[in-house]
Length: 471
Image (cartoon, rainbow, N blue to C red; front, side):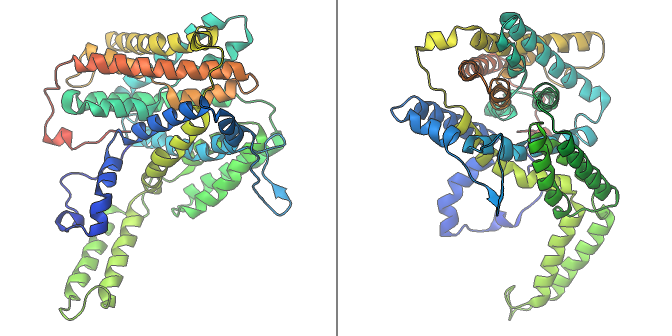
């Protein structure tokens, strides 16, 4: 979820003439600021993985991500998972823990101060997320009942927040901001549900001793929060040990990211009034120290004032928001694309028809393309009829159906659950991957098509358009 700068706040760079180097990278900078950029890079990496995995060099793809040993350790201590550590395992267990840390931070922020903090506002997206998880799971289970492939029932339950919000961002002002807020809240509630599914249904061979150490670290982190520690190091360093003990416990290591996020402080270290008073005082010192014969390189007083202003900003901004802002770029433009590159490479053998028309692929496709919009729309309709929730300002039922179809884009989290559910059944995993890719493409086209036929949102105004609820 993006934390954009408010459009009414002036920035120093607005009056600067860009230097030659900045002019060269400006197109890339603007691209990175687009809400849809993360989804576009994710799509590009997916296409690269599919082309690579079905080219003459497909064996190199499999070797690099699934066979090549990755040796991480210190001295005699080596980080291993069931006797080995491949690059793919490291990406899925370690790098994705950072992704789940960001997801956990977003969920905590939404619950405490965001759209999920108000019961009335939170009711509709939470109910919608529940309906959008139950219906796909039931459809998949009905097609796979009595077979060992039933273990993949959780695959079509997830919505990919990056892709769904990226597509919605392409529509710009055609959709009300309240609809973007709804989809954001729905995706976050959906992520929370997926995390619970992973923790409770895709965990095997528990190491109670390791879980005990992990629980002790969580307890320490909670105490650090309670006693007012606000520096990132106090939480991230123990977080590394938390990840290790969760990693060896049998619970999927990415859950450590969520546990760590739950302990991150959400309150600032200093009050807003104190921040304002001391920052203005520092600005006064900066102005009073202005010397025409010096610049910032030689004026020590001005440098000290600027550094104090930076420190004041760090103290007034909660650690949760600082970490979320710091992780958004690396997760969107590095971690998730790498995950897609390592996991979306489906080597199709025996023809597309054989790989597509089987109970696993069809269960995923029907679950995401039919189950998701059906579950989300039906749950929302019931909630509105029972006065549990209400549609946002300017939102029509046709737009809700379009957004519900976008909920069928289950890319990242669905692939992740598939790797957990079918890790001992490579054929099922390949079928699930193909189903996910096919269903996500179909859902994106249907959702986009429906929303394009809706009239432009009438209530957009300057204030609304300044809000950013992108992913």
